[in-house]
Length: 361
Image (cartoon, rainbow, N blue to C red; front, side):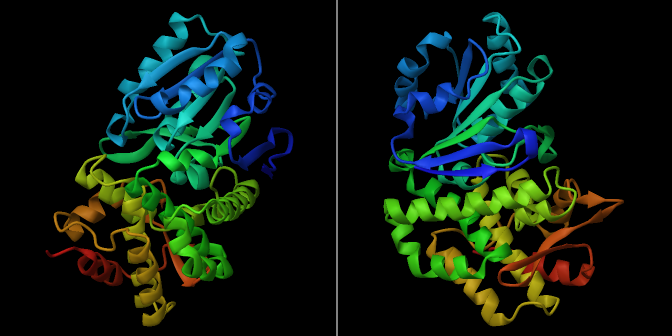
């Protein structure tokens, strides 16, 4: 087991990475605040892993809340089921919520923890690659709105993140690839050496070799921990973690939540960001081809849906958390391995990127 620390002073917390961690009862109990726990999961993950946690947490009189699986259910209406279950079980402010699932469960359970009785402790137990390398770390929680992704939420840090890499054995291939988008992002925004490692080892990741996966997860979590520690509430440098997300969130919202996986939309968004960076003179054609080739090798899409016109893209991108004073700031690449958050791009260049990105057949 490897242990990283996200250092936020008195609110610092550990990130445990290893195999068979769901069987490590003491790992969980040391971070339970009171005498009760509530396990939040979904109807895909719960049948696989909930039985492993029950005996470990029996003395905490666990409440189990099983939600429907999928991004389409990441809503306030579904979240209300969590509040109802906690209230019906008379859970108090010392009840520790445990998020057992992928990014949707982590975001929803985290938001429930941030808001139930004005805040209760919670533990992240991510079971997808995307959640393990990105969404479980850093304290972003929330739900979607029809007009924008993750527009309702809170920054709220867990007490611990427990990453059992063995859960990736049951992950569908499409979900594995979606997680690789966030891994590739790390190389693009701040670590050219890791980007080269990914180019050399991507086949090992797709084959789910444990050592390769553990390395990619450790590097990704360490990178995110360092960025979040420097800028917890995304007032500055943390925004670089959103490479491809403004474009990707527009795809998710525009196509209807659930039709595209988050990582698939982000993959297209990263290619679009690279294309726009080239149009601004920051990347070469070869750099863009390199980004595109790696995304393709990860079995991810590189073209936006034809149904989204440039105007529709801009409409959804205008409802973005990075819009300040009416200006949309984008995360672009000064070079491979160095990202920048900027509103200094021409509308014409953005229009050209939006037009070029659409799939035509």
